[in-house]
Amino acid sequence: MSRLSKRHFWEWFTRNNKEYLDLNNKSKKEATYWLNELNTHLRAYYKFFEYTLVLPNNGDTPVFTITVHGKAMHFDKVEKLVATAPEIPGWNIQALEEPRAIDFFLEEKIEALGIHPSECSFSFESDDPEDKGVIVYHPLCTEENEYPFLQMASTAVYNLLGEKSFALDTSYVKVENLSRADPDDVYPLEELPVHIALRKPALVVGPNGTLQGL
Image 1 (cartoon, rainbow, N blue to C red):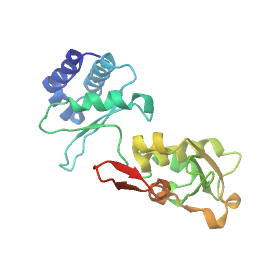
Image 2 (cartoon, one colour; image 1 turned 90 degrees about the vertical axis):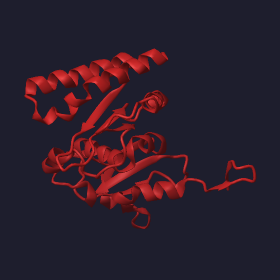
Image 3 (spheres, rainbow, N blue to C red; image 1 turned 135 degrees about the vertical axis):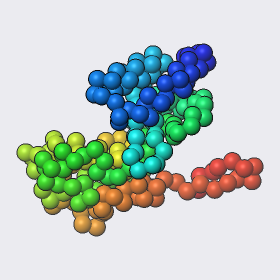
Image 4 (tube, one colour; image 1 turned 120 degrees about the vertical axis):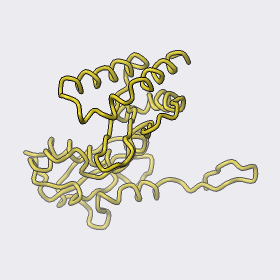
């Protein structure tokens, strides 16, 4: 997209941003209209773009996040658009979804399954850091609930890692009953970000200021 298209989107959002700050006070019909307008303008810039709006009631700054839901081939487009965003009072504008609570947006699945993701454990598919598969375990995982449990587990991993790490540091998520895990190689799911960091090669700053792997 051209620089003009980027400017057009941000000029439009700047003109109308207060409609979104006031979204929680609008009727359902009016709120739907403004959400559709944002979706239309964002996709007119790039068809794979989506967004999330977080409008806290506690005085925290509202957050407008542009996302491609983990599709790494589109990350550069998101980051370039957000890099051109002007300062808009009252908004925190972000590229890609950041890490958040493990149970974010999972209330219905937690209630249906009777499983909370904080109760889960995980292991990596293998010791090879190039193999980025993650196995999520719970003692109540069965063949009957495997699919909804996989949906919950995948979302929980996404929540813990954030959009960028989820796409770049994992290749797939699968689920199994905890009885199938190696007791010496299983960890609480909430520790996943730490263990992913530990699997990455250490970096040092070279004499010319560049990063070098050990």
